[in-house]
Amino acid sequence: MQGFDKSDPIRSFCRTTWKVLVAPRNFFSDSVLSATWQEPVIYMVVCVLVHVTMVALLSRNIAFATRSLVMGLCFPFITAAILFLILTRVFKAAGSYLAALQVTAYVSAVTLFSWMSGVGLVLEFYRIYLMSVGLALIFSVRMFQAFCAIAGTMAAYIVGSLLLNAVSGGRLLELLH
Image (tube, rainbow, N blue to C red; front, side):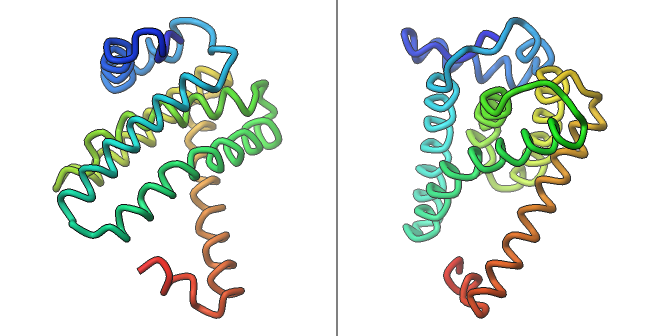
């Protein structure tokens, strides 16, 4: 995969965004994953910062924007870990945590536009598709297996949040609002 290149950040960012959103199969199958986590994570951070800036400007709610920033920067790492575990343990796929992290980082291209009214939900479904394509190609599994890994990750988040809410005596939901 020929992803973000920090030596040519602006041109590389635009090229990477275009390839991920318009030609994900080509992007994720073009070449081997980079051996480092830095470029994909820098790409993800820029996408999250653009998203959070737009959310802050439009909502004028700093607390909401701050939560969006924290979640946008933390959840891709957690998501990659869960996906990696499901794909390698349940589906016996070969791959690494770094590979899962690179897929989750690059599909953050969706966040560049998901702040727009009326398209956020559609783009989040598109993110699931992009992630399925990336995981299927990188981990050499079927699209259905990649989708099941994503569904399992969503289920893990739901169960985790329910458990955290129960342990906190219902205060978790209060903190998020």
